[in-house]
Image 1: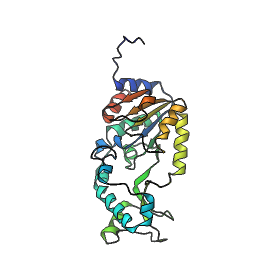
Image 2: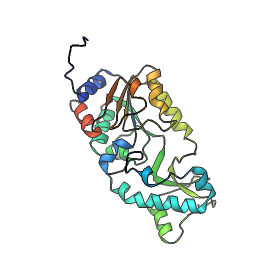
Image 3: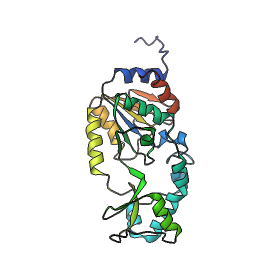
Image 4: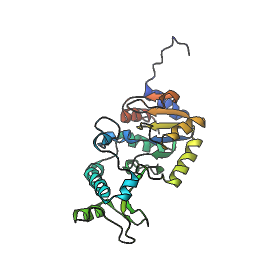
Length: 255
């Protein structure tokens, strides 16, 4: 294209054309896709990490005080999480999954909103906040059940089967990533011909390595995020606009 030719396509139009031309789309999402649902992100001003220093997994395991603080934070956020509903971004992603354009959604998010929107092929590489489990034997509880334990005075609950600490099934800093989910995410990433990284700062490793891997294996890389990311120079299309609005516009013609 000549330097004098103006591209009148909107970012959403360009994204829609890429989706229509692709045969195997994988979507990778971060906290930014859920902010429209009222769930704060981590790195933005006013985000969770500006209020709380993350609790390392080793500290959670070593200190009952840190476990108490971890539960306090979790249930302080629980009302926000349980009240949140899928937004237009989640619904647009679900439409692409349902229509067969998107093979899988790989998400860093722990809120379960992709599944609530109806997406079935979701890989949660950072776990889920909707399940609590024993760190040793794996016995599972629902968050309301554990909340009831804490309100009854057990503010650092242990497993009633083996006595080990209970923990939300989320991946903490310093905790090993789930091998099965990461292996599956890598395989899907390598096979994609279009990779959409949506609402992620793309700085948390090893998750941030997946969009780089997609590009390395030949996929067209699109980044949709309200702020710049370190991978923007390598992307084929960068959109720094509203995630929900952009995705809604991009899928409006999908059958």
